[in-house]
Image (tube, rainbow, N blue to C red):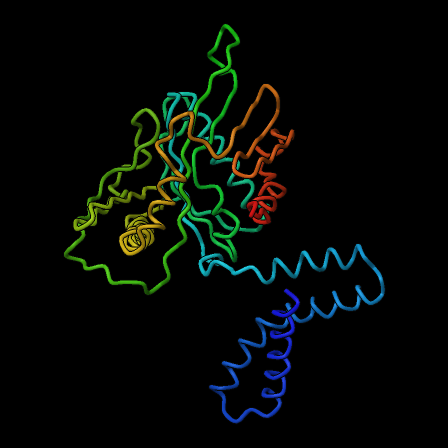
Length: 321
């Protein structure tokens, strides 16, 4: 690591000298971008050297950890907004109720991070559970924050309708897709089938009397998106097109990159109880993330949106070599 840092520092000093004596705006902009990326690494390296020289072992250790994180290659999609989709899997009504709990959890977590949540679509069951939900998380680093949530979430708890006090196990699938860049590919209007209808709520009651809900089908790929939570047909159409663009970007990326496709499918799985990334055990107040052997006993706080410690643990996890 030290050799790599010395190379980066030498390059940083070279760029610094070039910025003082730049000749044109185009080269100045290019040099400035590279300089800005290297600066936090070089600043931390200087701090590490000073702490080491002063014999401050604890500070040097902490600084070394920060340096390793700074040197870890970043996912170019990390800064994008995301589309999150939640669907009940195994467990019937109880799965739907837990899906609604996850939607609430993510909404509260996003608010704590000052992210904006924009609901694209949600369908409720008769008892207040969730049949399906899709929402957009808007903010810098949204994908970096939410990307580890993709997979099967398993819940163990006693349903309100259970008279014998037996613990039931249910599952919910969560998919997290980075929002497509503004210009990734062109969607041809002739490839779209657009249907409008009345938005409805639980029990079939109409939310309004106008045909404001929009369903768009991309015929070549049979990709379907629905939006009904906007106030007008125009608003729902715009939101649906954005979701469609995101879904198609993911679809085409899967076609081009089979390895990425297989990884994504493995993460979400079939929704079976045995396929899980995380277990929420309510009787014991325990949360376990099985990918990193992380266990916490603050399940109530987690369900109220306190996901910070878990997210940091997932982001910092390094698999055994």
